[in-house]
Image (cartoon, rainbow, N blue to C red):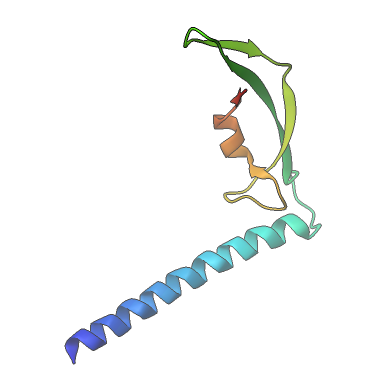
Length: 99
């Protein structure tokens, strides 16, 4: 019986952790959707530099820089409303496009 009890406790802990993650996500989503007065806009922008990687016949790759683009992001931990978090885009400012 102790093994069954330990399994039961582990399942309850796992269910609690999943419930906390879901509540955190829903709380962030609610804060982004509900227009409450706040000192900071929930949306931001990040300049993204794109680079085309073009393979050549001699097994080398030519890199061509494209014009920078502005990407919209959200100030949150997780992605919401189809936008990536600003902290993630800040780390991924250079994007490689493979041809």
